[in-house]
Length: 213
Image 1 (tube, rainbow, N blue to C red):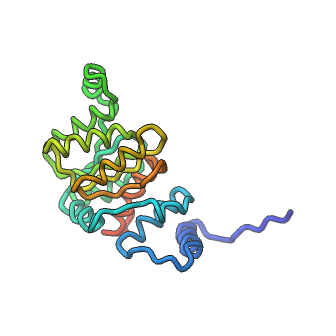
Image 2 (cartoon, helix red, strand yellow):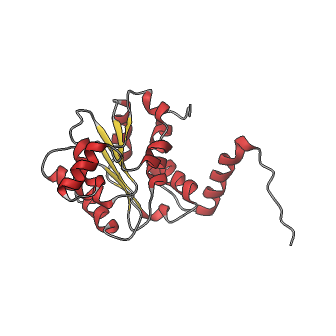
Image 3 (cartoon, rainbow, N blue to C red):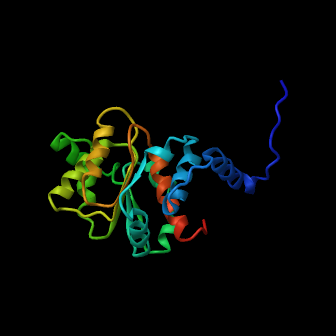
């Protein structure tokens, strides 16, 4: 069998990938403010289901972009997501990326309270006196704790990116976030991951300014 490869220059691979995504979406019209985010999730995962399962609260994208421009910081539930976020682009607006999962005090609190580290890390994040965007790609318990903190009036996130992947309490935790009055971008169902969480943050950054370095 003869295999034919496309002759694409390295710097043009991403552009060509987005052309293919657009072609395969066919006549489907995505909301203008959501289009880049949805296509970046598809680009990251090669999974076109994100065109259907990615849910946005009203004006979530604009609110998130305004928060980033106002210096909002990102809190993630994995070092992988933290590593994947363009920290230099975020720093232009005064923001930082935090992941508390490996912190000794978080481990100690989780052990003492019999919770996951993700739960304890959300408690630690709630003590930050800065505007926060949460990018959760792994732990549904992080979303559950965020829901509780919101209901208790202890935290008011600028945005929750709720895209944990898996089978246990994943679907339920995402539905809880969608019941709050906090802006959200949620991948409904079982799909998601740390790469998708980072991808959505980066898509928001690139919508503000497409300069990558």
